[in-house]
Amino acid sequence: MFRPATRAAGSVKEVLAVPAVHLLCLCMTALSFAGAGAVHSAPAEPEPGQGPAPAMLSISGLYTDTALRTLAPGVREFEPRFPLWSDGAAKRRWVLLPPNSSIDASDADRWDFPPGTRFWKEFAVAGRPVETRMIQRLASGQWRFVTYVWDDAGRDAALAPESGFKSLPVAGAPNGKYRIPSRQDCLACHESAAVPVLGFSAVQLSRAPAPGMPDLRALVREGWLRGLPAGVQASDIEARTPVEHAALGYLHGNCAHCHNGSPQRVPVQLDLQQRLHPGREQMALRTLLGESRFREAGRDSAAIVVPGHAADSVLVDRMRSTNPMTRMPPLATIVPDDAALAVMRSWIEQDLVNPKERPR
Image (tube, rainbow, N blue to C red; front, side, top):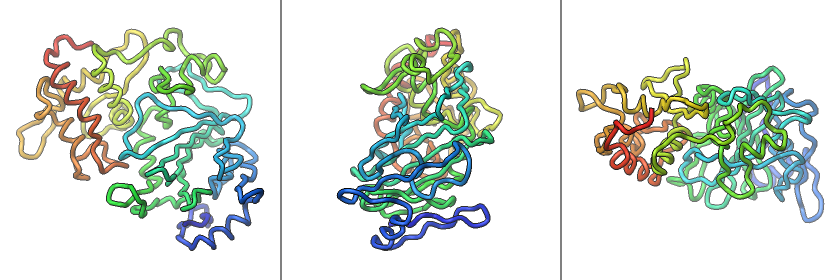
């Protein structure tokens, strides 16, 4: 159980564990109760993108009734085609734009979101919500990253400290422990990308992965996007086979926020970001199969991908590693993604046997 964070000198104080009855008393000072104990949200921030982060999820603008999960007007659920692996946690995502606003999509790979835009992502383990992260564009144009930790009853979630939590006891999580990311963890991934919003983009929304979820066509038709270049709505990742499409999509969703050819360089010079410009070059294949080599312990040199030989490919070694010094992705995961590893092995051993046929 957690109590709301308080602020001092502009920083977030530690969220402390307290008994359930104490949390209930604290919540009653900020929330109203009606019916059979349902929690109803107080009004969110009066001005979008200004002021401190709300102390509780229930006043962040996501829900009008947090206990019943009743979404606030204008909040829209979405699902990316190529989600980030999170050790098997179930995730849901929502977005809210300020009134009478839209997203400038004139640069298909660098959408410009209006100040006041908010995104939420809920993580659940064994059917229980554990955390909900919020990304918000402030009036200054900067982005705010905060995390809310759910109480045991699943009624509301309290603002976590900027340092996060290294190890929360959560039944069903790997080793029974769950890590809440720090603000620096958030920045490490999100600020390396062209746009800090990673799952709501032209590539991720090029097709709806599930019924009822929006895609590019729906967002353009409903006025959420403006200026999207002609041809992008019908575009897709360039790939020769379904397996290659899945492999490149996985790398885009799990690796391209760091490995994207941006000025914020990482040690291994890969560009795994997929782009939907017509006639674009397939940079992921070019860099994976080109001269991307680096020193690896126990080897003279190591190729990122060796066509036809998954066992000799450093990409596979890093994806299956549980060593925090070598695993990829390096943050927010400790369990290898077996399904993704199967796709990568199949792609490398079958689709890449003849690299001369790869798209350029």
